[in-house]
Length: 125
Image (cartoon, rainbow, N blue to C red; front, side, top):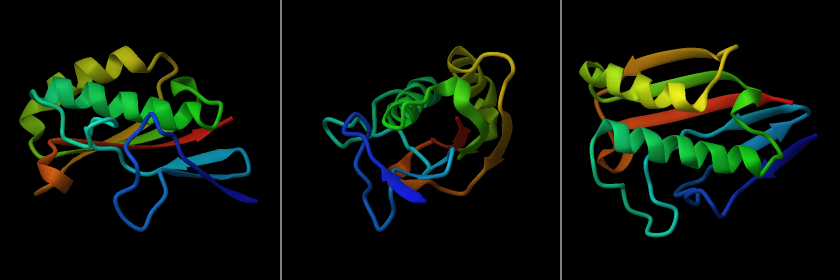
């Protein structure tokens, strides 16, 4: 069974996609960028501030399916400049505890709305 998951505490989808889709006990979350869910604008600041907003958005989507960061089994981080990996990783480590989810981090040419960071996750209950 497939169920669309949405949270008003995270930015609404800005295209033909869902914030997340639950299939059985697995939640597939769309990538979150650092949009403030109230204003719809990219948060001010650098990679640390953007990563914080991204992970708060991810947390809101997880909570909409009665999950939290401990349910995440895989994360993919997209960054426009891996020179800021350490900043992202320092914030990321505040949200995830051991045993950590698997993770890939890739540098991309650009992200929507000029974001510097985007994170997508898969979670299992």
